[in-house]
Image (cartoon, rainbow, N blue to C red; front, side, top):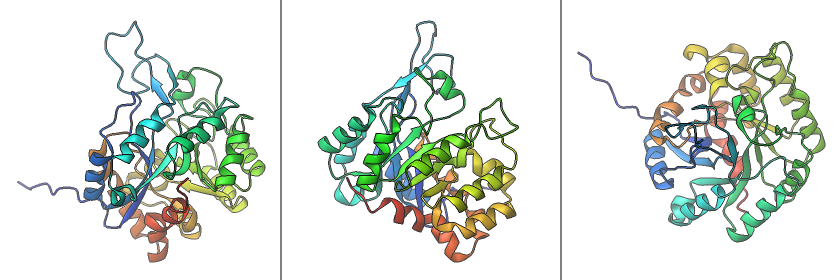
Amino acid sequence: MGVLEPLKGSKYQCIDAHLHVVDFLQDTGGLRKCLKYMDKANISHACVFGLPVTKLWASWERSSPGYYLGDNSKCYYYSAVDPFIARDYQSLSPEEQQRFFLFIGGFNPCDKLAYKHIERTIKYFPNMWSGVGEVLFRHDDLTNLTYGEPPRSNHPAMDSVFELCADLDMPVCVHQNITSVGTNTYPMWLHELEEMLQKHPKVKFVWCHCGISRRVYSPVYYQIVKRVLEHYDNLWVDIAWIVFDDYICPKGVPDPDWLQLCEKYSDRVCIGTDVVNKFEFLPSTIQKYDVFLDALSEKAGKNLAFNTAFNLFSKVRA
């Protein structure tokens, strides 16, 4: 009978460009626990997101939900996530702090005063923020479950946020699905992304998951991602979560078109785990990228694994 080898994480030194340190109940194992599993995964640095919403435990449910899809109760915006993460960060040693790129995200993207939350967070917790995000715009069921109007990347409330980020040179990570779950004949929300990119050319945007989420499909999807990368030089992408498993490397086999795309734009593509507080999954999740990185040139592989994210996120500590 064989013996299972322990997961050792990636063979490449990696930066996790998409890591949530809280879950949808705003619980966290803490940054020190995160560091423990980063070491096991060969992850040298991580982009730390909170979550801008928390899940309501409704009176009609007997047990607390564990995820936003756990039941039909709503989610609401939760601005305390940023100071809570900041206090945890302050408890680390300077060497440990350098391994994290912290992001501000606890604001309602439909509120025209959202920029003030970013300003206050930087004022009271200075010299620790590397970006803004993950801003949850068009999503799958999460959009329908969140109180308020549907957020979108071209919402006028975000103009002042993006202008502030341009002034501070802070990258912005956005979740903007390319289309809805029920519309699979054309990319109905792509124009919102492009309007954002056109209106704010000085902002460095990261399109999380390349616009894909659960049950989201658009025809000529690869060609769309290729076109927006060609057309907008202020756009980066991360290939975390479902887009990697379903499109880029289905069943562990790298797609030739995506290999070619990531080779060409390796300085604008990042990898990430999209782990949500379950840090024990970091080694196995980051390890899945090895087969794809192996198929790239040495330079492109190192860019996706480390260099692109480091060059993008390490320059700012606002």
